[in-house]
Amino acid sequence: MKLNILKVARYDYLSTFITVIGIIVFIFFVLVLLIMPSMFLPFLLILLVLGVLFYLRYRFLQGEINRLKDNVAIAKLKNIGGERANIFINLSFTHEEVDYHKRIMLLGSVLFRKKLEKIDEFKVVFDKENKKRIYLTHFY
View 1 (cartoon, helix red, strand yellow):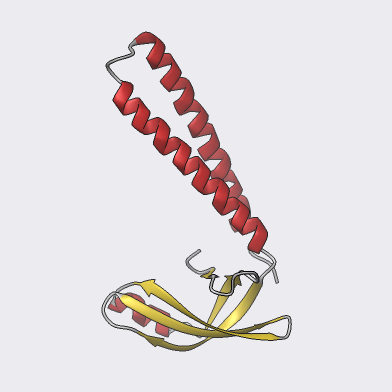
View 2: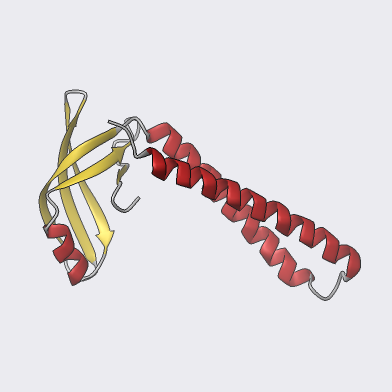
């Protein structure tokens, strides 16, 4: 079982788009620095730093997706707990004849909790090396 290839392809387009935006911001920064060094410098420095941070974040997420895309399983919902904004979901699934039981905390509201109660099965992506890391593909 693999991830939906359209989601992965859409993510690759997004990371390429972020790369292009980072390059354009850098070129714009250099041009404005040459033309008017003092007027837009603080604004452009903030944009440059944010562009680099977004680029690094999306490259990290792309590496995580490529590493975890083979570890997909169908998890059955055991129960939903929690109060107010914290919702805890207990899931159980089997992957390569190993049983896993996980608890995931989500931030949500009462309506979000009622929507989750209607779903019996979730598609999950998990990390074999770090047993605490698990992602719901419905929200990932």
